[in-house]
Image 1 (cartoon, protein in one colour):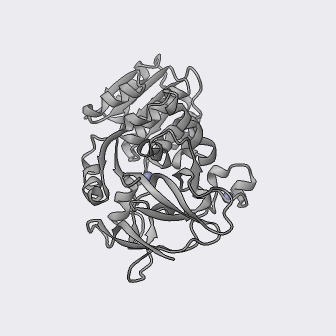
Image 2 (tube, helix red, strand yellow):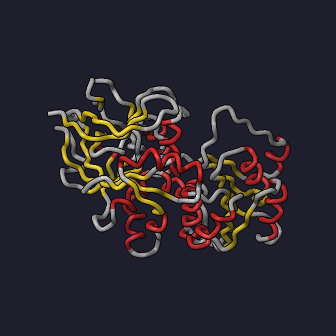
Image 3 (cartoon, helix red, strand yellow):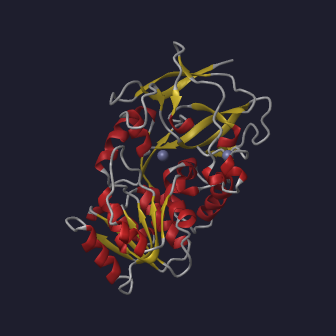
Length: 366
Ligand SMILES: [Zn+2]
Ligand SMILES: [Zn+2]
């Protein structure tokens, strides 16, 4: 029997998100229904609401979640009713050309639910990142559920479902930060601060946090930055020189751009050591272009990498990162800087423009 629950939708471009009744259909063979306990408020939800992703309105917003499996389709084997899970948007297929080459983090055919959630009038919803979890329940593919320790609170574990994983993985997976290396992170919101924490976990010894907003530097220091720099008014070259001063005159081994605008990318490009790595994890806006001297791209060597979702593999990464949190070795709870409920999601999305918080989490039900 289809179930009607509350969910937050975006009906039209730039219109406020609305809390409405949505219909969860019976699961298809490999689908599961998850009772959502907590969902983080991510910039991607804001981009969906404001028409920055595509125009497949109405969207069911929300995608950074933990909850409990309540119904499973007839062919589900990956999870059982009652399992405590973090939702992911990288349920790898195992069969596409990326999966067959042994790089499933690039899977080109990730799984989503086979059935459609709808409004009560039958209008099909587009779930954000194939999840849609600013809702009391959602419908996903079984592979989108990753079991983690019951001991981690949902508002903390759920953060691994998107932004915090993106930042941790930008350092640990994409950047391949090694013990004793130097790392600089540009942009100290939730993703950038997670990259700082990831650099620390990976054993970096010099970790530099940079942001134009001086107020954001303190959180980076708490999470592992050994140095911080306020960069308001400085050119990319000036910022790069300051990073060089902190790294023996050379630049950082890895520079992570968690903003994604030409100025921060240029800063990252020149703030790294010769043959260093640049990791772009901040999501650029459509239409933005980058200009760099091609001779410098060649002559400085190294690698320029993009990091989608921190190159994570949920089944590998979510359980061990949850365990590190429970052992006191990764302060995931430090990222929760605000709480709201489903009715407060639209206001929380607006407040993302102001910055200053790492993550606001909608606490939904238990
Ligand atoms: Zn695949
Ligand atoms: Zn997200």
